[in-house]
Image 1: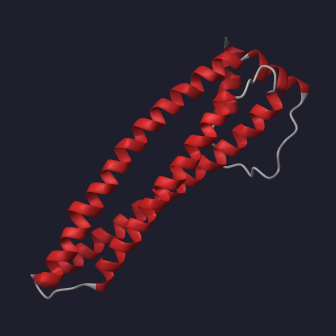
Image 2: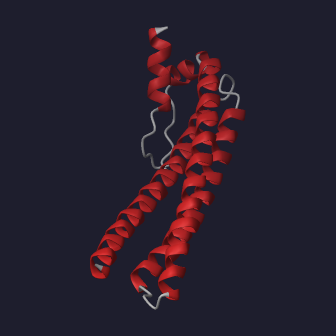
Length: 167
C-alpha cells in the first residue's frame, strides 16, 4: 500500500511539464503504472468530479463579478457622467479572460477525460504521455485563474482610488 500511494503521488502531482519532451518510461515505471491502474483511475475520476465542482463555482463567481459588479458599476458611472476608462478597460479585460478561462477549462476537461479512458494497464506509455498533456492543460487553467485574480486586484485598487476621488 505504501508503494501504491507513493506512485500515485508521483504520477498525479500537478507540476508544470513540457508536453513536447515526452519521457520514455522505464520498465519499472511502466510496471508501476500498470500495477496501480485501478487506483489511478479512481483518483483521476475523483479529481475530475472535484474539478467540475470547482469550475461551476468559479464560473458562477466570475459571471457574477462581471455582470453584477463591473458592468453595473460602469453603467452607473457613465449615467452619472463619471466614466472611467481604466475601470471600463478592466471590465473588458476581465470578460475576455473569463472566456479564456472557460475555454482552457474545457480543454483541460477533454484531456482529463481522454486520460481516464486510456487503459493504463495495457498502455502505460500512452497513459503517461496523456498525463503530461493533461498537466499542461491544467497549468493553463491555473494561469487563467491567476490572471483573473490579478485583474480583480487591480479593479479593487481602482475602486478604492475612485472612492477617494469622490469623497
